[in-house]
Amino acid sequence: MKSENPLQIFVDESPEVQKAYAGFIQSLIELKGLDAKTKQLIYIGMKMVTDDERAVRMHVPMAKNAGATRDEVKATVLLGLSVIGLKAASKFLPIVLECYDR
Image (cartoon, helix red, strand yellow):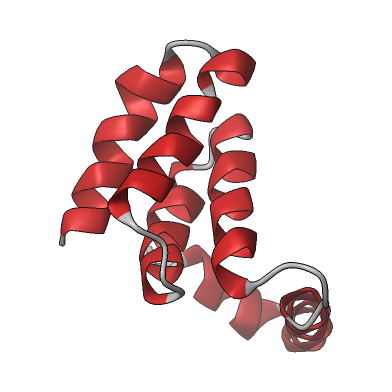
């Protein structure tokens, strides 16, 4: 199998499961109670905890587009110090700030 976007492989190999998953994600996006910016900041924090660098890189611009400031995104990362330790500052802070500043 040629190297390509792993999510495209998901679409190509299991379109019915991917469609159901996309519907599930859409239902989360539409949840009431949290605005889009807050949801994206939470996603950044959760994805840091699971060490999902790709998802962190994806959610930073989404947070920015939803109105998150650089300070809000930085605070989200620094809150991770209490959960994942110095990895929050040493790994994710540079990634998040670089993504935000693009």
